[in-house]
Length: 129
Image (cartoon, rainbow, N blue to C red; front, side, top):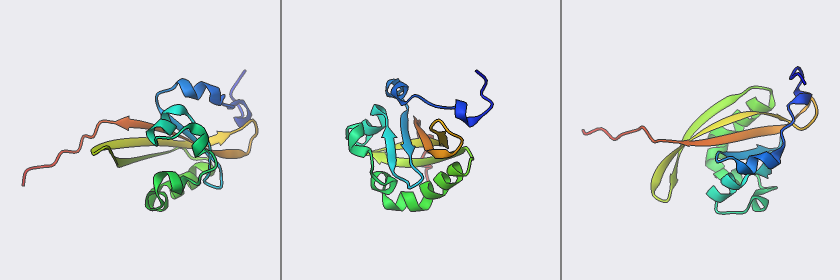
């Protein structure tokens, strides 16, 4: 099997639940169509509770408008986009690196965007004035 066409890039979502990175598939309408367990757990929910939610309901309207929407639109148009942002989680700053890529569900038309989030060490340090 060659990977000459997007038709061959079908991803089996059942494999994603065994991955520690957070994986979400977002529909062209910006709704969550899949979330793996790692991602749902970060939001203190079961994966099924995220399905159908608008991404703004998950990441917050401000973050959606100021970052995610443009990046998702670019990925829907065929780009692979990397987006990094900081988040507060239980009083600690967590830096998230998102990789947004077109998601094909067995066809040549983009079925949505696959977002893979990796948490990376916060390298920012406050400097003494």
